[in-house]
Image (cartoon, rainbow, N blue to C red; front, top):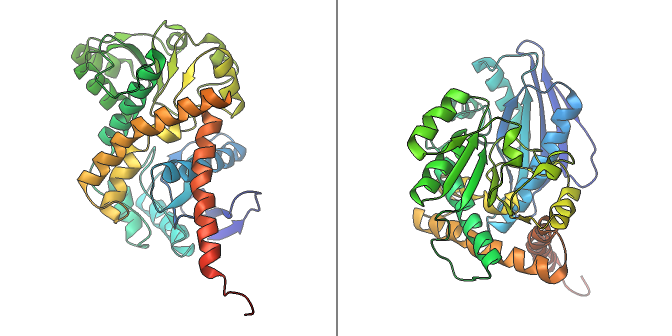
Length: 357
Protein backbone atom coordinates (compact mmCIF):
# COMPACT_ATOMS: atom_id res chain seq x y z
CA UNK A 1 0.00 0.00 0.00
CA UNK A 2 1.26 3.44 -0.96
CA UNK A 3 -0.51 6.50 0.48
CA UNK A 4 0.58 9.98 -0.53
CA UNK A 5 -0.76 13.32 0.64
CA UNK A 6 -1.62 15.99 -1.92
CA UNK A 7 -1.63 19.63 -0.77
CA UNK A 8 -4.70 21.43 -2.11
CA UNK A 9 -5.60 24.96 -0.98
CA UNK A 10 -8.94 25.06 0.82
CA UNK A 11 -8.95 21.36 1.74
CA UNK A 12 -7.92 19.93 5.08
CA UNK A 13 -6.53 16.71 3.64
CA UNK A 14 -6.36 15.00 0.25
CA UNK A 15 -4.71 11.61 -0.22
CA UNK A 16 -3.96 9.30 -3.14
CA UNK A 17 -3.69 5.58 -2.31
CA UNK A 18 -2.61 2.72 -4.55
CA UNK A 19 -2.17 -1.00 -3.95
CA UNK A 20 -0.62 -3.18 -6.65
CA UNK A 21 -2.10 -6.63 -6.03
CA UNK A 22 -5.74 -5.43 -6.25
CA UNK A 23 -5.20 -2.48 -8.60
CA UNK A 24 -6.64 -0.07 -6.03
CA UNK A 25 -6.30 3.53 -7.17
CA UNK A 26 -8.27 5.93 -5.00
CA UNK A 27 -8.45 9.51 -3.82
CA UNK A 28 -10.02 10.70 -0.57
CA UNK A 29 -10.66 14.40 0.01
CA UNK A 30 -11.54 15.89 3.37
CA UNK A 31 -12.83 19.37 2.65
CA UNK A 32 -13.93 20.40 6.14
CA UNK A 33 -14.32 18.91 9.61
CA UNK A 34 -15.59 22.14 11.18
CA UNK A 35 -18.98 20.56 11.92
CA UNK A 36 -17.66 17.08 12.66
CA UNK A 37 -16.04 14.13 10.86
CA UNK A 38 -16.12 14.45 7.08
CA UNK A 39 -18.97 12.34 5.73
CA UNK A 40 -19.30 11.42 2.07
CA UNK A 41 -19.81 8.38 -0.11
CA UNK A 42 -17.26 6.30 -2.01
CA UNK A 43 -17.74 6.54 -5.76
CA UNK A 44 -16.47 3.59 -7.83
CA UNK A 45 -16.10 4.72 -11.42
CA UNK A 46 -13.92 4.42 -14.51
CA UNK A 47 -12.02 7.69 -14.96
CA UNK A 48 -10.03 8.03 -18.18
CA UNK A 49 -7.51 10.36 -16.56
CA UNK A 50 -6.25 10.78 -13.00
CA UNK A 51 -7.00 14.49 -13.33
CA UNK A 52 -10.69 13.66 -13.79
CA UNK A 53 -10.74 11.59 -10.60
CA UNK A 54 -9.02 14.34 -8.59
CA UNK A 55 -11.36 17.01 -9.95
CA UNK A 56 -14.39 14.87 -9.10
CA UNK A 57 -13.34 14.10 -5.52
CA UNK A 58 -12.57 17.78 -4.83
CA UNK A 59 -15.91 19.01 -6.16
CA UNK A 60 -17.88 16.26 -4.46
CA UNK A 61 -16.24 16.70 -1.06
CA UNK A 62 -16.80 20.46 -1.10
CA UNK A 63 -20.40 19.86 -2.09
CA UNK A 64 -20.81 17.52 0.89
CA UNK A 65 -19.59 20.26 3.24
CA UNK A 66 -22.28 22.60 1.92
CA UNK A 67 -24.95 19.89 1.83
CA UNK A 68 -24.35 18.78 5.40
CA UNK A 69 -24.15 22.36 6.65
CA UNK A 70 -27.43 23.42 5.03
CA UNK A 71 -29.13 20.26 6.28
CA UNK A 72 -28.13 21.15 9.84
CA UNK A 73 -26.02 18.02 10.33
CA UNK A 74 -23.06 17.94 12.69
CA UNK A 75 -20.79 16.33 10.13
CA UNK A 76 -18.29 17.83 7.72
CA UNK A 77 -17.68 17.20 4.04
CA UNK A 78 -15.56 14.52 2.44
CA UNK A 79 -15.61 12.11 -0.48
CA UNK A 80 -13.76 9.17 -1.97
CA UNK A 81 -13.41 8.09 -5.58
CA UNK A 82 -12.01 4.72 -6.64
CA UNK A 83 -10.82 4.56 -10.24
CA UNK A 84 -11.82 1.26 -11.85
CA UNK A 85 -10.18 2.03 -15.18
CA UNK A 86 -7.57 -0.68 -14.63
CA UNK A 87 -9.21 -2.74 -11.88
CA UNK A 88 -12.31 -4.70 -10.92
CA UNK A 89 -14.36 -4.03 -7.81
CA UNK A 90 -13.44 -7.20 -5.93
CA UNK A 91 -13.77 -8.00 -2.21
CA UNK A 92 -10.00 -7.73 -2.01
CA UNK A 93 -10.00 -4.23 -3.52
CA UNK A 94 -12.81 -3.17 -1.17
CA UNK A 95 -10.80 -4.47 1.79
CA UNK A 96 -7.75 -2.46 0.76
CA UNK A 97 -9.92 0.62 0.32
CA UNK A 98 -11.29 0.06 3.83
CA UNK A 99 -7.73 0.08 5.16
CA UNK A 100 -7.16 3.47 3.52
CA UNK A 101 -10.32 4.84 5.15
CA UNK A 102 -9.20 3.44 8.50
CA UNK A 103 -5.79 5.10 8.16
CA UNK A 104 -7.53 8.48 8.46
CA UNK A 105 -8.54 7.70 12.04
CA UNK A 106 -12.20 8.64 11.77
CA UNK A 107 -11.70 12.03 10.16
CA UNK A 108 -13.47 10.62 7.09
CA UNK A 109 -16.61 8.44 7.21
CA UNK A 110 -17.43 6.56 4.02
CA UNK A 111 -20.79 5.43 2.66
CA UNK A 112 -22.54 4.27 -0.51
CA UNK A 113 -22.37 6.29 -3.70
CA UNK A 114 -22.40 5.69 -7.45
CA UNK A 115 -21.00 2.24 -8.18
CA UNK A 116 -21.14 0.98 -4.60
CA UNK A 117 -23.71 -0.91 -2.55
CA UNK A 118 -24.63 -1.82 1.05
CA UNK A 119 -22.89 -5.16 0.49
CA UNK A 120 -19.69 -3.33 -0.49
CA UNK A 121 -19.90 -1.25 2.67
CA UNK A 122 -20.24 -4.41 4.77
CA UNK A 123 -16.97 -5.72 3.32
CA UNK A 124 -15.27 -2.38 4.03
CA UNK A 125 -16.69 -2.45 7.57
CA UNK A 126 -14.67 -5.61 8.31
CA UNK A 127 -11.49 -3.52 8.40
CA UNK A 128 -12.80 -0.12 9.54
CA UNK A 129 -15.62 1.16 11.72
CA UNK A 130 -15.63 4.46 9.84
CA UNK A 131 -18.28 3.51 7.30
CA UNK A 132 -22.07 3.76 7.14
CA UNK A 133 -24.26 1.05 5.69
CA UNK A 134 -27.97 0.86 6.39
CA UNK A 135 -29.23 -1.84 4.09
CA UNK A 136 -32.02 0.50 2.96
CA UNK A 137 -32.25 2.54 -0.22
CA UNK A 138 -31.80 6.28 0.50
CA UNK A 139 -33.13 7.21 -2.96
CA UNK A 140 -36.76 7.81 -1.91
CA UNK A 141 -35.58 10.29 0.73
CA UNK A 142 -33.35 12.02 -1.83
CA UNK A 143 -36.25 12.20 -4.29
CA UNK A 144 -38.59 13.63 -1.67
CA UNK A 145 -36.13 16.42 -0.91
CA UNK A 146 -35.84 17.21 -4.62
CA UNK A 147 -39.63 17.40 -4.84
CA UNK A 148 -39.70 19.87 -1.96
CA UNK A 149 -37.16 21.96 -3.87
CA UNK A 150 -39.31 21.75 -7.00
CA UNK A 151 -42.42 22.84 -5.09
CA UNK A 152 -40.59 25.82 -3.63
CA UNK A 153 -39.19 26.81 -7.03
CA UNK A 154 -42.58 26.57 -8.74
CA UNK A 155 -44.27 28.57 -5.99
CA UNK A 156 -41.49 31.16 -6.10
CA UNK A 157 -42.07 31.52 -9.83
CA UNK A 158 -45.80 31.90 -9.17
CA UNK A 159 -45.09 34.32 -6.30
CA UNK A 160 -46.86 31.93 -3.93
CA UNK A 161 -44.96 31.54 -0.66
CA UNK A 162 -47.01 28.80 1.08
CA UNK A 163 -46.22 25.09 0.52
CA UNK A 164 -48.77 23.13 -1.45
CA UNK A 165 -49.42 20.48 -4.04
CA UNK A 166 -47.92 22.64 -6.76
CA UNK A 167 -46.69 20.09 -9.29
CA UNK A 168 -49.93 18.96 -10.95
CA UNK A 169 -49.65 19.35 -14.74
CA UNK A 170 -46.09 20.70 -14.38
CA UNK A 171 -43.89 19.34 -17.19
CA UNK A 172 -40.70 17.86 -15.75
CA UNK A 173 -37.84 16.33 -17.74
CA UNK A 174 -35.66 13.82 -15.90
CA UNK A 175 -32.12 13.17 -17.12
CA UNK A 176 -31.06 9.77 -15.80
CA UNK A 177 -33.30 7.14 -14.20
CA UNK A 178 -30.98 5.40 -11.79
CA UNK A 179 -32.18 4.89 -8.23
CA UNK A 180 -32.98 8.56 -7.61
CA UNK A 181 -34.34 9.40 -11.06
CA UNK A 182 -36.58 6.32 -11.11
CA UNK A 183 -38.00 7.04 -7.65
CA UNK A 184 -38.43 10.69 -8.53
CA UNK A 185 -40.43 9.84 -11.65
CA UNK A 186 -42.75 7.53 -9.73
CA UNK A 187 -43.34 10.13 -7.01
CA UNK A 188 -43.95 12.91 -9.54
CA UNK A 189 -46.42 10.70 -11.40
CA UNK A 190 -48.37 10.38 -8.15
CA UNK A 191 -48.45 14.18 -8.04
CA UNK A 192 -49.88 14.21 -11.59
CA UNK A 193 -46.87 15.88 -13.17
CA UNK A 194 -46.21 15.48 -16.89
CA UNK A 195 -42.92 13.63 -17.45
CA UNK A 196 -40.25 13.33 -20.14
CA UNK A 197 -37.34 10.99 -19.40
CA UNK A 198 -34.04 9.81 -20.84
CA UNK A 199 -31.25 7.42 -19.88
CA UNK A 200 -28.51 5.31 -21.44
CA UNK A 201 -30.74 2.30 -20.76
CA UNK A 202 -33.64 2.77 -23.17
CA UNK A 203 -35.31 -0.48 -22.12
CA UNK A 204 -35.48 0.84 -18.58
CA UNK A 205 -36.94 4.09 -19.92
CA UNK A 206 -39.69 2.17 -21.69
CA UNK A 207 -40.43 0.21 -18.51
CA UNK A 208 -40.73 3.40 -16.47
CA UNK A 209 -42.75 5.14 -19.18
CA UNK A 210 -45.32 2.35 -19.03
CA UNK A 211 -45.75 3.03 -15.31
CA UNK A 212 -45.74 6.82 -15.40
CA UNK A 213 -47.05 7.75 -18.88
CA UNK A 214 -43.74 9.51 -19.49
CA UNK A 215 -42.44 10.46 -22.93
CA UNK A 216 -39.03 8.97 -23.76
CA UNK A 217 -36.45 11.05 -25.70
CA UNK A 218 -32.80 10.65 -26.66
CA UNK A 219 -29.87 11.67 -24.45
CA UNK A 220 -29.08 14.79 -26.47
CA UNK A 221 -32.72 15.74 -27.06
CA UNK A 222 -33.54 16.11 -23.37
CA UNK A 223 -31.87 19.53 -23.03
CA UNK A 224 -34.03 21.14 -25.71
CA UNK A 225 -37.39 19.80 -24.56
CA UNK A 226 -39.68 22.71 -23.69
CA UNK A 227 -40.60 22.12 -20.05
CA UNK A 228 -41.16 23.71 -16.67
CA UNK A 229 -38.44 21.86 -14.76
CA UNK A 230 -35.25 20.17 -15.95
CA UNK A 231 -34.09 17.57 -13.41
CA UNK A 232 -30.52 16.24 -13.79
CA UNK A 233 -30.35 12.91 -11.97
CA UNK A 234 -27.29 11.31 -13.56
CA UNK A 235 -23.61 12.15 -13.03
CA UNK A 236 -22.42 15.70 -12.41
CA UNK A 237 -21.33 18.38 -14.85
CA UNK A 238 -24.29 18.03 -17.22
CA UNK A 239 -24.82 21.81 -17.23
CA UNK A 240 -21.87 23.27 -19.15
CA UNK A 241 -21.27 26.08 -21.64
CA UNK A 242 -22.75 24.01 -24.47
CA UNK A 243 -25.79 22.49 -22.75
CA UNK A 244 -26.80 25.63 -20.88
CA UNK A 245 -27.52 27.28 -24.22
CA UNK A 246 -29.82 24.42 -25.19
CA UNK A 247 -31.89 24.45 -22.01
CA UNK A 248 -35.55 25.25 -22.62
CA UNK A 249 -36.84 25.19 -19.06
CA UNK A 250 -37.93 27.61 -16.35
CA UNK A 251 -36.40 25.77 -13.39
CA UNK A 252 -33.33 23.56 -12.83
CA UNK A 253 -33.85 21.16 -9.92
CA UNK A 254 -32.60 17.58 -9.75
CA UNK A 255 -30.96 14.86 -7.69
CA UNK A 256 -27.47 14.78 -9.25
CA UNK A 257 -24.47 16.21 -7.42
CA UNK A 258 -22.38 18.98 -9.00
CA UNK A 259 -24.85 19.60 -11.81
CA UNK A 260 -23.03 22.77 -12.84
CA UNK A 261 -19.63 22.14 -14.45
CA UNK A 262 -18.43 25.22 -12.56
CA UNK A 263 -19.92 28.02 -10.46
CA UNK A 264 -19.96 30.39 -13.47
CA UNK A 265 -22.82 28.35 -14.91
CA UNK A 266 -24.92 29.88 -12.15
CA UNK A 267 -24.48 33.27 -13.81
CA UNK A 268 -25.34 31.75 -17.20
CA UNK A 269 -28.58 30.29 -15.80
CA UNK A 270 -29.42 33.61 -14.15
CA UNK A 271 -28.84 35.46 -17.43
CA UNK A 272 -31.23 33.06 -19.16
CA UNK A 273 -33.88 33.63 -16.50
CA UNK A 274 -33.73 30.01 -15.30
CA UNK A 275 -34.32 29.44 -11.59
CA UNK A 276 -31.63 27.13 -10.22
CA UNK A 277 -32.46 25.20 -7.05
CA UNK A 278 -28.88 24.33 -5.96
CA UNK A 279 -28.27 20.59 -5.95
CA UNK A 280 -26.50 20.46 -2.57
CA UNK A 281 -29.50 22.19 -1.02
CA UNK A 282 -32.31 20.05 -2.45
CA UNK A 283 -30.75 16.58 -2.72
CA UNK A 284 -29.83 16.20 0.96
CA UNK A 285 -32.67 13.78 1.75
CA UNK A 286 -30.51 10.70 1.23
CA UNK A 287 -27.70 11.82 3.52
CA UNK A 288 -30.26 12.79 6.16
CA UNK A 289 -31.86 9.34 5.99
CA UNK A 290 -28.44 7.66 6.20
CA UNK A 291 -27.38 9.76 9.18
CA UNK A 292 -30.45 8.60 11.12
CA UNK A 293 -28.93 5.14 11.37
CA UNK A 294 -25.51 6.51 12.36
CA UNK A 295 -26.83 8.69 15.16
CA UNK A 296 -26.40 12.17 13.65
CA UNK A 297 -30.19 12.49 13.17
CA UNK A 298 -32.39 11.07 15.90
CA UNK A 299 -35.50 9.51 14.32
CA UNK A 300 -37.59 9.09 11.20
CA UNK A 301 -39.71 11.99 12.50
CA UNK A 302 -36.68 14.28 12.60
CA UNK A 303 -35.60 13.16 9.12
CA UNK A 304 -39.06 13.89 7.69
CA UNK A 305 -39.11 17.33 9.33
CA UNK A 306 -35.66 18.25 8.02
CA UNK A 307 -36.50 17.02 4.51
CA UNK A 308 -39.70 19.08 4.57
CA UNK A 309 -37.51 22.01 5.64
CA UNK A 310 -35.81 21.85 2.23
CA UNK A 311 -38.87 23.74 0.97
CA UNK A 312 -38.22 26.67 3.31
CA UNK A 313 -34.45 26.67 2.73
CA UNK A 314 -34.97 26.66 -1.04
CA UNK A 315 -37.46 29.52 -0.79
CA UNK A 316 -35.00 31.44 1.41
CA UNK A 317 -32.20 30.89 -1.10
CA UNK A 318 -34.28 31.99 -4.09
CA UNK A 319 -35.59 35.05 -2.25
CA UNK A 320 -32.11 36.17 -1.12
CA UNK A 321 -30.69 35.59 -4.60
CA UNK A 322 -33.34 37.85 -6.08
CA UNK A 323 -32.77 40.54 -3.45
CA UNK A 324 -28.97 40.44 -3.86
CA UNK A 325 -29.07 39.96 -7.64
CA UNK A 326 -26.78 36.93 -7.35
CA UNK A 327 -26.91 33.38 -8.74
CA UNK A 328 -28.66 30.97 -6.38
CA UNK A 329 -25.67 28.62 -6.15
CA UNK A 330 -23.54 31.48 -4.80
CA UNK A 331 -26.22 32.41 -2.26
CA UNK A 332 -26.60 28.77 -1.14
CA UNK A 333 -22.84 28.59 -0.55
CA UNK A 334 -23.08 31.80 1.49
CA UNK A 335 -25.87 30.24 3.58
CA UNK A 336 -23.76 27.15 4.24
CA UNK A 337 -20.63 29.21 4.99
CA UNK A 338 -22.57 31.28 7.53
CA UNK A 339 -23.21 28.21 9.69
CA UNK A 340 -19.61 27.06 9.32
CA UNK A 341 -18.29 30.44 10.45
CA UNK A 342 -20.69 30.52 13.41
CA UNK A 343 -19.36 27.15 14.57
CA UNK A 344 -15.75 28.29 14.10
CA UNK A 345 -16.37 31.42 16.18
CA UNK A 346 -18.12 29.40 18.90
CA UNK A 347 -15.22 26.91 19.03
CA UNK A 348 -12.67 29.72 19.23
CA UNK A 349 -14.54 31.33 22.14
CA UNK A 350 -14.83 28.03 24.02
CA UNK A 351 -11.13 27.25 23.58
CA UNK A 352 -9.93 30.73 24.61
CA UNK A 353 -8.31 30.43 28.06
CA UNK A 354 -9.19 34.00 29.00
CA UNK A 355 -7.15 37.14 29.67
CA UNK A 356 -3.90 36.81 31.48
CA UNK A 357 -3.49 33.09 30.84
